[in-house]
Image (cartoon, rainbow, N blue to C red; front, side, top):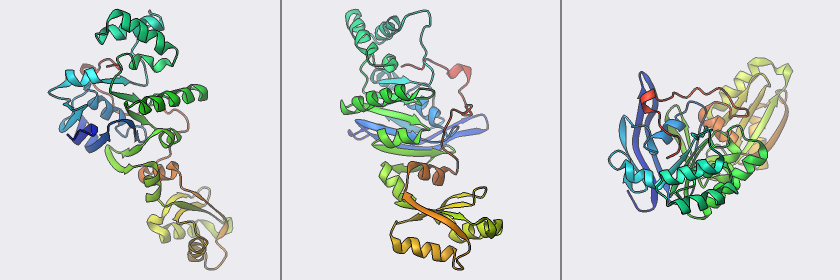
Length: 315
């Protein structure tokens, strides 16, 4: 593992029974900054985090976190990381400060230092339990699920501050605006595989720097819609037969837009209206996963570990 990498995974695979959750995933996460793992529910994000955080063993593959092998040096890894999942594993019989002090003691902090950290962190956010030990790497598994907009914005501010201070933040999310705003690099995972990786700008460029949205005339009929989609092939990054709309990758120039319109509507009777806009991560998500991004919290479908593999969500 090179010194500039906080996390390196090669050939990561994991199955539960006959269900394959991860299929030879490779990841290289630089030290410092925010790395986002983006994907739909059931794509394998949580399983990836659990393996990297030493909570679940991979079936095959090699993983090093903070310079240490997660299989043979898991104690060293755990001293350098923190994991905050969607649901906090805290003692409901204790106050927030008592929980934070307990986390500090579990991380072998002196009592006075644990108390001081608890007081400081309570002023920042309820992510505090994962920050008590001042880890090198923080895993945040969909941390803003269910949060109101103000709390979500506060979380974003904290994540940005941690990255600025040199902490490596490994973030999983289904919220595209979250990844777009926070992440230095993004990996898109679908069906247990990494289907694309790069900066937000690089991923957007893969599906076109601009997108031409075309609405076909109702009078053209469903046959015209099917013909246009077939004619465009992979250039059609979105297609909605119910709304009769097609999104087409374009460079945004007048010449290219005019050429596309001439190509799909040579007779001037198919297109009712059109619009050109900058490609977003929504477009990337739809093009790479063929599934809609999350707008509301769905029921979880990701394969969960067995009872013997369940451990604390805070390391």
